[in-house]
Amino acid sequence: MSDENIENPTEVNNPARADVAVEAKEDFAELLEKSSGLQERLAPGQKVRASVVSISGDLVYIDLGGKSEGVIDLAELTNEDGSCSVKAGDEIEAYYVNVRDGVRRMTTLVNGYSAATLGALRDAFDAGVAVTGTVKREVKGGFEVSVGEVRCFCPFSQIDLKGGREGGLFLGRSFPFRVLEFEENGKNVILSRRALLEEERRAKVGKLRESLSVGMDISATVRSIQNFGIFVDLGGVDGLIPASEVSWDRSKRPEDVLSVGQEVTVRIIALDWEKNRLTLSLKALEPDPWAGVTERYPVDTRVSGTIVRLAPFGVFVRLEPGVEGLIHISNLGAGRRINHPREVVEAGREVEVYVLGVDPENRKISLSMQPKPVPKVVVLPEVGTLMEGTVDKVMPFGIFVKLQGGLSGLIPNSEIGATDGADPRRMFASGTAIQTIVADVEQQSGKIRLSRKAVLDKKTKEEYAEYVGTVKQADGGSSGLGSLGDILKAKLEEKKLAG
Image 1 (cartoon, rainbow, N blue to C red):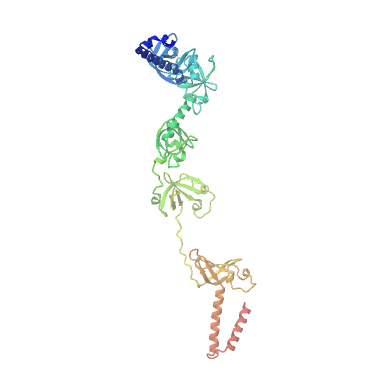
Image 2 (cartoon, rainbow, N blue to C red):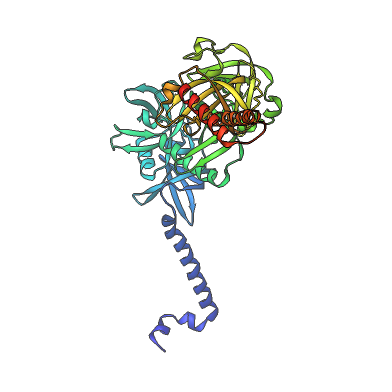
């Protein structure tokens, strides 16, 4: 028999007892593993729910499972009258701090117990758990905060997310705080409420990122009102309603629509999680007043409105809430030139205006104080028409002529009919009567091209026909060229002397 068998004769001779022994070893090993592993499983600041085992001296013992216990300072669980607020068997929530002197230290400060010692604050600082404190008074640079019997300090910048210069909002109130700094003697304990608020906000932002989307309607609470818009709380995350998105009626100011603390439904119109910007809208929940605006304000109709704004280029008139039109400065002076609308109108004035044009897509309506003039029907002459006129002005490229009926035409240089080297400026002074023939007409633009040369050619032909008739009568109907040539020569000499 081996030495091993000599040392364990029972297990060899009694197999049943050997199985029990093995099972007992396994149970003990499992319990040992649970007990030794508990410290590794608990992280500083981790919350546990445990039963009170006993109260001894200045410590309260709680059951952490696996025959493991933790201790809490009795001061944390002591009422103002000195009695203990818990008893054996009660279940409480506590936070793991650390192991000190071989004992697992726990704290319940985050649950709001008022009695705290320097040791408890040190434990909270080590574990990174929150403590509950009451803001007592405002001091230089911040607030004095009482955490149980310990006086602590919270800077202005750490009392809230937006700073805490408004001391009246915090005095006398209790809040959870994070211990930022702790000195063993307790003379320098610095707290921060902002650190906890930022952690809470990050957690809420993470949840909101998964649930929010553009176009969604959500509930919010008005937090503050500024000239440029309204800040609202979406449950830990701020959103902005720009002033332009508060109402379709641009004359309304943000403070005219909402008040601080008011519950309101808004629509998300833009999300920028990188910059934590949520842009919201109130007016998106209302009907668009520009829908059907063409039918309500037909062109050439007369409507009533109120002047709401003056600008150097004109005035804006509110026709209805959310719908404005523009009277251009050129339509304000009733025919006379003005430098600024204030010379003839003022804001707040009720006016009757005429609709000149409507552009629903660009949200523009053109208005006028006077009705749109009825365009005159212009009858353009036909090509070949002989017309009387007067010289308007002589240009390097031709002569502009005023014609009957308010028309105007141009005689190009090639159609003036002057001899080479002649100066049109000397020949045709402004106001000189002149005969022209219509050479061309552009119906779309109304431009008329004239010809004086054609008039001269026509007269020459008429004179030629007249001369031919005279010769025939003189020769008794013959066509003697000698006589005709003499007559033409005489006439040309006559015209030359006259020119």
